[in-house]
Amino acid sequence: MYRVLLPIDDDEDRVDAQVQTVLELPGPRNGVEVTLLHVIDDERASIPKPTQIAAGQHAEERLTAAGVRTLERGETGDPARAIIESARDLGADLIVLGGRKRSPLGALVFGSVSNRVVRDARRPVTITGPIDHLERPSHRCVTCGETYYTSRETGISTCRRCGGIHVERVRDDALEANA
Image (cartoon, rainbow, N blue to C red):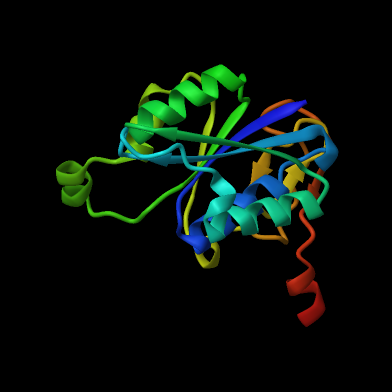
């Protein structure tokens, strides 16, 4: 079982991009388990359930409809610390965060949960943006899942990661329908 931690907030576009990223992971979807995590920065608040907010409910519905097993987890306190500790406790293989665009000064003044998680997590972290900015990979290695972001016309004969020879173009139904 491949375990993904999906920390969410109430921004539906950001959560949608996170869900899309999970759905594009290589391999069978029934081999993926996603834990939706919602953290409130107020330790006096009751522990939140991710599906109590619209973005969490929508994420759970999309993942379940795609055959992905979903779990819920709510935490209070420092978001970055809660994400890192939850990933460790769950044995997550990947953390998929929804990033925000902030200027360097804004990140310095307000801090950045994403920056802290990337810096301190002991597992891979993927950061997505809004769904309309989510780039699609052009190619993927069938053997190891390595993704490439290049022109779809580019031929890739061997995988840079595993040396495999089965690197295929990623099918993009929207592009192929317009062709």
